[in-house]
Image (cartoon, rainbow, N blue to C red; front, side):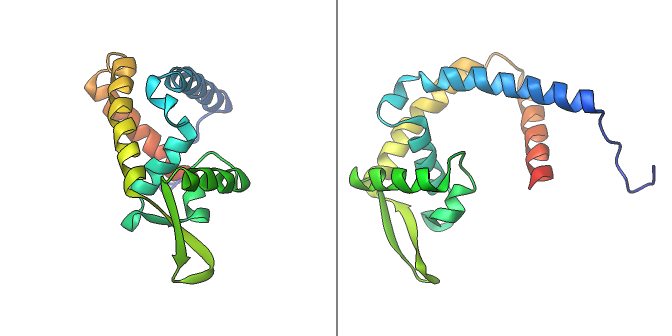
Length: 152
């Protein structure tokens, strides 16, 4: 091993950790799906609103938004149409690419996202807040961010 190379985890360690992380996510996601705030919008629809709210200038091209979601491009297109029909999202021409459009939240979309978001964070805290210490949550965030960066 050279000074610049990092030790590589064993195959067993990698797969055991992934399986544990995946099982924890499945358990959490099942609880989240049943939370009352997702009676107004599905969790996936909320995820679109949440990600749009966090985009620079509050606007995104669909292809860029899709990079943050676990949904196919055709499914996202259909979902955006439904969210537009409900008055939560609006499309506008992309000034940098005439073939594309940019998406943003309407005032109503922002209001719905904030209402659901407030309830969602409370329920997440009720579900998970006592599972780990403050320090452990910081470590989980650090490790999750490190994994994310390694893949990107």
